[in-house]
Length: 168
Image 1 (cartoon, rainbow, N blue to C red):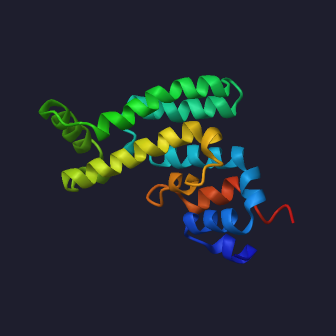
Image 2: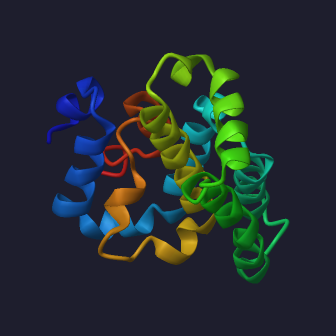
């Protein structure tokens, strides 16, 4: 990917793949910037973060980036972010399904979707918030690219936070 292609790309996933595959050292050096990018993507999709714990995960990622909390606290807070994920993933009782349907009705972007498609979108957004919180601990995992879900990431936001051609 050339600098011009980077500037014109509409696919954040392709841009991230380029960095990870063609510039792995640079990609690994962008831990803070990539977590900031993930935070920005979460706020861009805030309407899909229907659980307070998911929104708190993003706020706590910001607190970590600001130096207000350490990694140990970050991982302790992850329990709450995971609870939001599991609340959607394991909603099986009629009562929980009705609660989830009510949440779906409150989110314009998923309101008209079939229940399982709407549920999956909310689940993926909750996972994004969770991964955003713990990104410092997972950024070296071989599966880290799964964090960057194409439904939620934005090329323009990536360009704001990661500048691979400005250091050359």
